[in-house]
Length: 426
Ligand code: FAD
Ligand code: FO1
Image 1 (tube, rainbow, N blue to C red):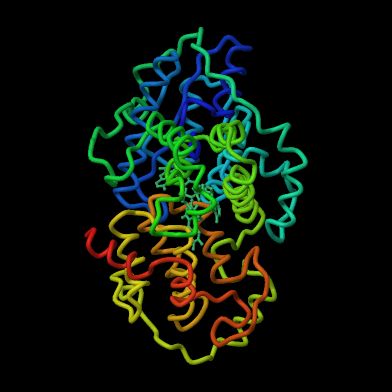
Image 2: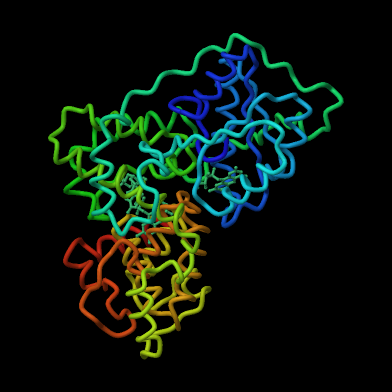
């Protein structure tokens, strides 16, 4: 278990349980925790560990074991699986480089089969497409065609009838690393970690706020988005469960479709991009037209050039951008509409696209609770490098990359009100 850190609605866990039942075996969930996950800060670990603590309790109620191993999987798993005489290893799916590398190294060292189950996408990434898609317009029809087959209810985990025999006492100390830090501080006041809180938040959103999603979602001054992305990122909430709840709500189709477009099409498009584009976090991953136009404007005069520290401290010449950065730092989140503007200004105020990409990824991963995610790398590649977007009217620095600025934001929402709220919140 790595990406999908939940007991309910977890197809990888259900598959593992089915295999264990067939072979009359015990069932154990292992989470390999590394201290230096790329871009992660103590707040992110606190949110994740809290979720894992709840997971451990829930698993034990189902007579399923849990082990938190404090080492990288490719180092500790082969030996651990030997010690416990494992029959099969089942893993969830994640398109990110670090996970793909872990699996590649693991495969060569395993003596048991490894089954990978994509329980993050409603239609598994390798089924919906065997190549990098151009955009939502090419992926959407493929998803629409099969969605009814995949967007179903999800069976519950059973009480496991076969006991998990703890590893023999001589197993090294790390194997019995059952402890999960018990810090109770919440990473951020606005969100409580864990599968139960995630489910409650999802039910609350579908019942109370989905109805106004279409109107409010592009206005950062309204609480129009679901706020569920950290739960989806850490896998404490199943995207399929959320989509299932939305699809069965009594709301008008266009309201439901607007949300499912983001949750299903946009999110699965992000996994598709990271899965089939090895350079998902580099300029080399931008489409040819975008790389070409950015090259042609590489030497254009920048209105301003800021260092990573100046961006990080929100000390640019534009108050709206500074408010976005302050919002991101103090709450760990930034409204989807503002994220586009926030990233595009980094392109405008850095010497070149490579620097812009590095700064945007660094800050997004460091400060967003939902960061370090395929959605983030893809959202930034869309903003800076036209990924899944088209060419727009040519201009300085951006070339034909879609432009956004404060004036555009003023046309959409009360910018002064937003700035005021952020700086008074602090
Ligand atoms: P809602 O509008 O309620 O959407 C519900 C869910 O749908 C989201 O949680 C997400 O899983 C999915 N979704 C919505 N919009 C998008 C999108 N544009 N692309 C992919 N999936 C989407 N999302 C992250 O999860 N982590 C990130 O680090 C991240 N960084 C981004 C950086 C930039 C520059 C941009 C432009 C977008 C980024 N996004 C990221 C995508 C999107 O902005 C967030 O998913 C969304 O704002 C999260 O808030 P929410 O859950 O309230 O969204
Ligand atoms: N996944 C792991 O398997 N082990 C970790 O130690 C780990 C740490 C971690 C810290 C912050 C964070 O945002 C994600 C982290 N993840 C870890 C991955 C996470 O569970 C998700 O799988 C990915 O981030 C989504 O692509």
